[in-house]
Image (cartoon, rainbow, N blue to C red; front, side):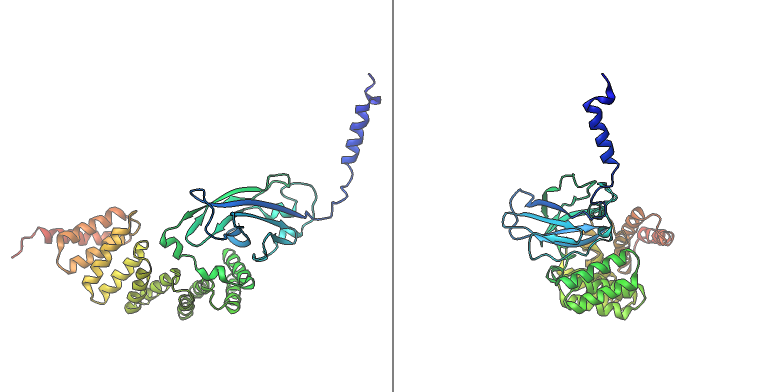
Length: 367
């Protein structure tokens, strides 16, 4: 057979010739990628109410859409940003990759698929935490069916680290907040402060934005400004736990023991079972204010809930309180526990020396 004259050869030549030509849409942009999925509770049942769906890219969350009555959702990411299926979602800020022209159908050149690198989808519902699903695509032929996002009940402590005012914020305030978080991630602190200021100006009850503004002010050693921002956060959402932590730590740093006791007490009133650090602050502040019994109670409660022994200093503080009360045997026991949990602590040599004195005192019979 004369291969050059065969029909197969003609087709091969035509295909090779076509592949060498410039695609007619070389300078257009990829139009959109559509995603769909559903949300369910861990027992498989549908959520009790509509659930917000967010796209999280490089740590920054963007609202996309809401689920319907059966827990289903869909949205699209396009070259112009995000078009969600519902009218309640905020318009996402277009990624810089979305303005790039397409060269070929690859992960690195398609503007929409490139913008989805390091992106996941999560569900947001008060009282629950969501599993995340990656939506990173290698090309537009990949499946965009997300599947099921499962919601698990949160502990009270986890729920309190999220402010309800974040979901209530208008789109322009959320957009400024997201830009501020991104700027913080990139260490552009002045830009971040400006965006958080815009967010609280647009929505004065934006507790999370006030909190982040306080963090930035503290980083510049503007302690009064940090305290003012955190107090605004509490005024906006008294059930948002993070400002209590900020104000307590700031008061302790300034040795303002009255405020440290007050804010740590309020923190514990909000949640007495999930924050051993609050008990540590409260024990120290109470001891400084000569409220010894209160200090001992807080130290013991902190040790009780610190199941993973993350705060060794609770044992040390309790040991100091007991030493003050001349209860040397138990005090020595607390110091030994501290040294077991934190053998390389900076004050470990001093504690070992104090422990030797306590053991000698405990061994000496009372007169």
